Image (tube, rainbow, N blue to C red; front, side):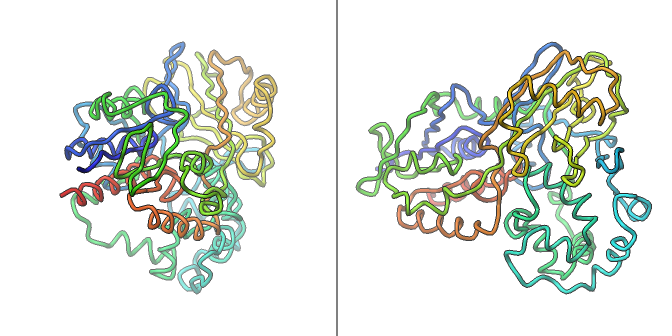
Length: 448
């Protein structure tokens, strides 16, 4: 007889797999170390503020995320950011500048040098790169110039990975960008070709909109948890050890034909008791950014106009924060009517020392930074919470090639083991849903 499938981790990846397996009638159990589902996703309501600890939003960037939301349409209310929230601000020379969103604004912006603006005109004729492990920084310098790296790509990467463009490799960290150059020989040629491609009605819905749900991201977690059913989820499983014997996996003395792990690389070697440390070393060496996330709320906002998505700080500007999201401008009902809700990120791979600061030290640091950056006359927030993440965001560097090969080798040696999660395939919510959907489809096809 076939035994059920085990899913390790009730984050968005594990819940997505479980959701589709349940629909297909395939038996499974999700094991979660915490006392709730959702992983790093967690929404809170306090003092009139609705704030997230962990991811704050997702992007409608693939068919899989749209399909999942469609299937849950009667359980969740999708909320997308308004047009005003499309505006991104970049800090340069003591003031904010809007990141260009068109040709004219790109010509006028003071973010980029005149010589680099001219270089962009030559970008379609610059030869494509030949080094598959070229860093993002090198690629951008080669095709666009230093100022584009400093004031567009660097802050963009801080916002997604809290990482360093000198470390990240586009082939793994930004595969769509890498493929534009490799397929079309140019970012601009590739972008034009993509626009001209005939799209299916479903593909036309992929509009890259920023999304959440009315009530926060926990609404998605709750909907998936309810659809899966509590009988398929075991919480407080914080000492799980997976054993492998007679071509079967054993958890808490129970047999499973397949195991899907969705946990971080640092924890993986601890639970896979049958895998030797040297066998899994290329996976466990995965680098993670360390981050502090600050949720800050004001009942009466008295700073600059924050009708935008947020502001990002290039490393070259030597500030103490990575960026700030204007959450009450992105989504409705996140703060009192005249107030504001901010989410601020600190640390990352290049400022890890900030993660060591205590709450009092970080409060003073944020007071100084935000007073200047956001033109605040007074820093007396009604809401102030810090959330420390020592293992926050996976960094896809040149070592990713070895890690991905290592995953394949281990899965081949132990048939039925699927190593998933942010160790591969991207770090965003849409990436996690896409990966979980594909794993579920693979398992469903195998059970037909």
